[in-house]
Image 1 (tube, rainbow, N blue to C red):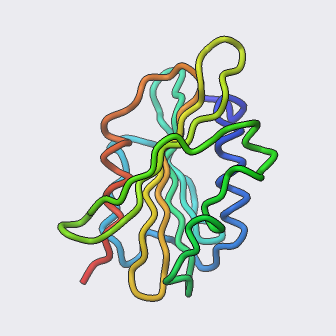
Image 2 (cartoon, rainbow, N blue to C red; image 1 turned 135 degrees about the vertical axis):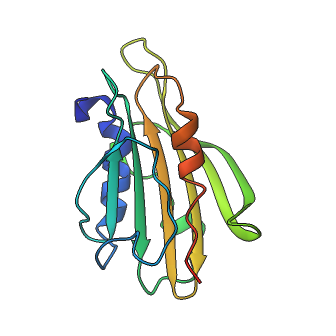
Length: 161
């Protein structure tokens, strides 16, 4: 997989990751990435898994925002003013529960179609645990089918108790 296939969505999230502090965001969590996906090292409080399938078109990312236990959702997850998103928008937003009965936000972000292949999509789950905020994202490139395993993975941001 080349990063140019999902680069606009990845760029949005990587820009957000610069605000993150800390090491491996999976420490102290029960996060379950998609089975068989290739793991990357932790950097600046985020970690990424890449779809290993031939022509893999997706990535799952987990971010930990240390000492950010309350989020200004509109400010902290705002894609509208980010030039890397190329006219994309949040097309769905819902309150959900994860890890039994823990509150979270679920979003679907879509970047405008390019090259006639259809839009690039990202599914995002944002939640807080104690003094930390977590964001899990599954991004796939234009025209790629969704991975049920990746969609399920982003809902496993559960802090171990």
